[in-house]
Length: 282
Ligand SMILES: NC(=O)c1ccc[n+]([C@@H]2O[C@H](COP(=O)([O-])OP(=O)(O)OC[C@H]3O[C@@H](n4cnc5c(N)ncnc54)[C@H](OP(=O)(O)O)[C@@H]3O)[C@@H](O)[C@H]2O)c1
Image 1 (tube, rainbow, N blue to C red):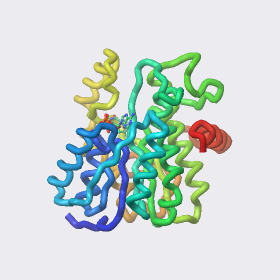
Image 2: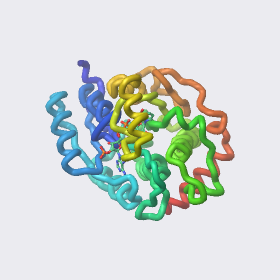
Image 3: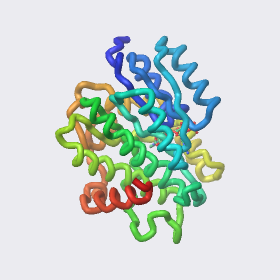
Image 4: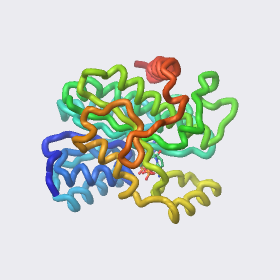
């Protein structure tokens, strides 16, 4: 395979399984220097070892961070910047589903923190490096479920009423609103940002111990795509020259498509940005 990503530094969050792992392997196979973000030491070591063996690319390393801990995100950004001066591609992919409401060590609802807020923070901390590396790209892995959600500013952390799907939908909508707001702020910089819905993919995602999710997973395992199929649009956005100048779009199956009506509301996007900025203490 042509190693046209040689010399390009890429980071994939949640790279120790599923879509993130497949994306990382594809980037390494194309010659990129890849930072595998993981939260577990043994899993991260294993992922790096496997990807090096499978691709013959030795420029793969891991960095650890729990995305439910905001100080971990600061540490991850610092660790990255102490090793590298450039970042061509950032894939914000880590995600999790919480059937029951939980709070992080920072006192923030877990779905919102892991799926959205930590990526908002990481992206902002790495923004100068990404801009200095232009043309460069950010890819936010969202979900079609965002279409069923709104941002509930009165109860953003679902304290009054919680459902796993509701909180997950809101976090994935937040990612799309963040994508569009960031794209507006980055106009003319050569740094692009797009969101992607991978569709239903048979990964370990959502296995949180609940019976409902276990049933859903059985269906997805039969009818869903393989992780290799599901990752194709992420890999396309990270590497294809076709989308080098495309920004502020939502993709499915390598095509820019409409996201929900709520996701295009600029006032909501600005309000969310300001609120997120305060929540992460920037
Ligand atoms: N699968 C689908 O049908 C589907 C559909 C739409 C969108 N998505 C999105 O696609 C992305 C990738 O999901 P996937 O299907 O590939 O699932 P996956 O196999 O479960 O991968 C999720 C990744 O996120 C990591 N992660 C979870 N919680 C974390 C935390 N607190 N801190 C750091 N890392 C954490 C996981 O780490 P560990 O390996 O340590 O658990 C794993 O590497 C997610 O954002 C998900 O919302 C998936």
